Length: 419
DNA sequence: GTAGGGTTAG
Image 1 (cartoon, chains in turn purple, red):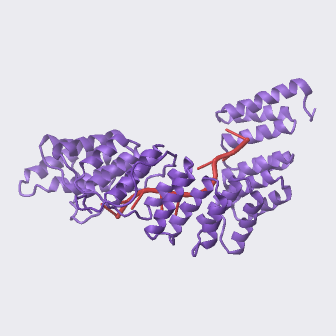
Image 2: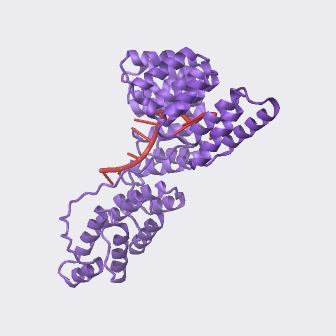
Image 3: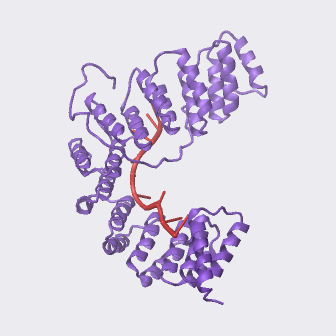
């Protein structure tokens, strides 16, 4: 859909808004369309190949095919050298090859190289096509380079909902929540219809501020655009209500959902935990099991922590049994939570058993154990564990050091329980 | 043809 003077000027004043913070996903490996017949690669070096190919003046497309193939094979450095040669010989880069290069740079998280490619592209033309513009937008947003993304967006001859979504998510990810919401309103203003990807991103901007009024306004949009039955959008809505502290609002949505997935359960369960209503959260966790939904690591880490808030050791042990049966006890986060709750219940020996069985540990595991000993009045054990941690090459952080210092202070004052 | 949403501790 192109921006034109005829696009309906609908909805909402674009001057609303406020900011949030969003996590960044790992990029997926690039997939390349292969409409063009790929060139057979010979064993010759790229430079030699290039001169061979260029000598064949009948087929000016060949260097682009070769470049495309280098990208398919993820040979970034070779592809860049090849591109430089093409540049020297003033061979135009075609759209497919350019997109392949951009995607490869994004996948390899190669910002410098991506910028070089963009520099080359922008020297060739003052405007960008939809496909190439979207690829560049995706790359710059992935690198957190909003200025470049914005510049690309401005150079695009045509934009689609993907272009808007990527830009909105970019601003939201960097914490520019006002700008992200403003962009969303501009998107509506120029006549684009939001899709299932737009709402989760926009709703998180309301949840992170938090701003319930704005969240409710987006909820109205969800209904108006007909997404109130979409499980992904409703999950995002629920999360927005949870983050804004409106648990009844979230629960109302949850109870009305015609289709529920694991994310819906996790969102509402952790929503109760986050808002201090651990009992109801646990009740829903059991209901989730009744409905034959398998909890995942996210569910279990939050449920284990809730047992600590509830001070329910028996439940903690039951949950521990459950994670062992389901194989989730191999997860570092799950184990760290278990060490934490057992230490808080005074069951330091059980915490120790969990710690000893761990195949992989991180600084949190070590610190949980050290502070577990320290809180249970075993400063010697805390110090010994700290030494072991150092011996095994783990870098203590400020939480670790605070626990060790506290253990030393305790020992100096009261001695060790064990001695 | 690409992207978004649930947990994130000691």
